[in-house]
Structure formats: structure tokens, C-alpha cells
Length: 455
Image (cartoon, rainbow, N blue to C red; front, side, top):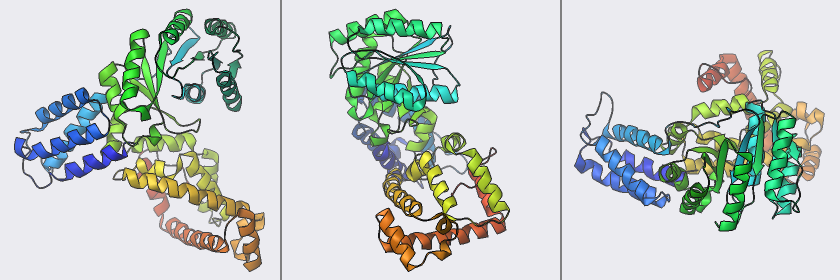
């Protein structure tokens, strides 16, 4: 996410180091390069012009403060202006109404509305403890109804049955009555998409909107369509009173221009971003945190929130107690730690949120780490319980059996055992010196990090 823009901006800002003052002369080239970086990131031209003018106005002539260089002054100005451009702070869902609060999802076909409906239901259930009902009013694509039904079942969230033979407005009306009668907190209505904006589509969704009177009308759009995402958001906003936007597939968008343009062009807040196919991969959009990531300053707050929410706290505490008692860290523990990291989105996702991380390197680590983690898990799963607890018993014949069972080579098994032995030594040293506790406290700040995480 934002890899191209992040790399270009950081390279540009480094060029101002060593100057005593930010002047019109020494800022001209960096501003020109920032402008090009934004345009290449597919940020809308009017947005780029306004942003560059604002940065220039606020940066030129500003005295370098104690211990600050012009580069740092410009970083601060760029940080403030990017954050302001995207809305300054997170705009949460407004559910302050007589239940059920209705959330209507609109958008073009292929944007990810159905998956987003399920992700949003999961988020509301787990983070806000809401009783949620899902319904699909996409009568033109029977597969969409079945898809949402399956996702609801997987998440153990109630689904209101519908059929492609029904009228979309009638489905929405019946689902709303069901939600009222059974005291649901939230009703999420998934609507039909089209390949392009057309009058028939708009007429239908306007009728649904009038029927259910949603408190939130969210436009779901694929971030990888760039400026088309912004244009379609503007078209929908003219037909519906949109309350916000959800950008999907942000994990695959190295440019991120839509995220930077949406608020300025439409005036509507970007409320959520989709960061992958996993049903956990829907994040509230925090402009300040996103800006921090773009400028290479990390997003430790989101990282700590991920740990608190996605790490199995019981397993983490059990691991901490085990290490404290001096018990040996074994391959079963190693596998559990890998699974915990995968639950947090993988090593690349974690690196991306650490200060100083390079976005391109984080993406590469994500790809390589995912393959390595899958291989390590397969190898460990091919071992017997005894071999996982006591790797020293693994001889040549056992290695051949493990390699065959995991679809790997004997050298892969040897490499894993060597890496594991090194990790055992490292964890023993860290425990003896109290370094593990200090490191976790340092990463987690005042709240701390759960014990046993393999950082």
C-alpha cells in the first residue's frame, strides 16, 4: 500500500538535509518531485495542485527549529497537509438511532461489496458487540446471495434469506421488518452492482434507500481503479446521500491515489479500507496513521491494536509462563508463534507498521515470509508429537519421512532445525538477561505486548 508514493517522497525529502533554512529556491525541486510522485500515484490533478500550494505556503520561510533540519520541517508540513487532505481523523460509523441501524452498501460490480458486507458484520459483532443481520438484495446475481449466505454461516452471523425471483425493494423491506421484530442492533443490506453507472441501477438503489432509510450509506469501490474510483464515487453521491466510502483491495494498490483524492473530490469521509481477502482484513481508516506510514514513520498504534485484537491472549500468556519457569521452547511453540504472526497479517504487514520500514521491502518480506511460513508449518505438522517436543531425536530416517510427508527436501528440514536451534539459544539468552521483557514493553509502550510474541 502506497509503496511507490512512500519511496518517492522519502527520497525527495532526504535531499533537503544540511540546509539551514527552507527557502523558495531550495524547496522548488523537492516540491516538483513531490508533485510528480503524487501524479504518478494517480492522485487527482486538482488535489495535487491544492496540496502543493498549501505545502509551499506553510513551509517557505519557516525557521528551522532547534535540532530540526529543513528536511524535517518539510516532512512535518507534508505530514500535516496529507493528513488534512484525507480528513484529519477517523470518522466512525454512526449507529446512534433507534435499532436496527441500517447500513446500505452501494457500488459497481466487482468492487467487493458482498465480502465487505461480511467483513463489516464481523467487525461490528466482535469490536462493538452488535447483533447483526445480513441480507442480499442482489437479485441479478444469484451467486451473490449464496456467497453472502455462506460467509454469514462461516462467521456465525444471522442471514435473512432472499431469492433472485423477488424484487430487491421487497427483500429489503422484509429484512427490515425481521430486524425490528427480532431486536437486531444492525441490518446490513448488500445491493446489486453493475459494470458501469446506469439509470436503472440508480433508480433501484434509490427505491431501496427510501424504503429502509439507512443511517449509513457506504459506497464500496476498488482502489485499484484509481481515478475511476473517485469518478464513480462522485456519480453515486449525486444519486444517493452517501455517508462514507470503503476502499477495497488496498493491499494490492501500490499507488493509493484514490485514498488521497476521495475526501477532497467528493467531500465524503473514507471510513474503511480493505486490506486483503481475509474476513479480518477490514481496517477503520485513520488519516494520521496512513500519512505516518506513507512518510516511513510507521504505525505502531495500529500494530499494538492488531496484537491486542488478533493474538490469542491465552496462548501468549501460557507461553510467557512457560518461558518464565525455564521450560524449553519447542517446535510446537514455534508453530504457534508463526500462526499468531499469520493472524496479524504476516511479517510484511507488521514490518510496514514499524518506523523506518521500507514499503517495497515489507511487501517482499510478506511474499517470501508467507512461503517460508507455509513450508515451516508443513514440516512441523509432518513430525510426530515426540519430534516436535524433542527435536534431538530426529535422525536421518526421520528427516526423510518428514520431508516426504511435507512435500519438501531433506535440506529444508535441516535448515528448519538449524534455525530453530538458533532461536532456542537466542530466547534463552534474552530470558536470562531480562531483554525479552524490556523489548516487549518497548514495542507495546505503556500497555505492553503479550508475552511470547516472536519479535
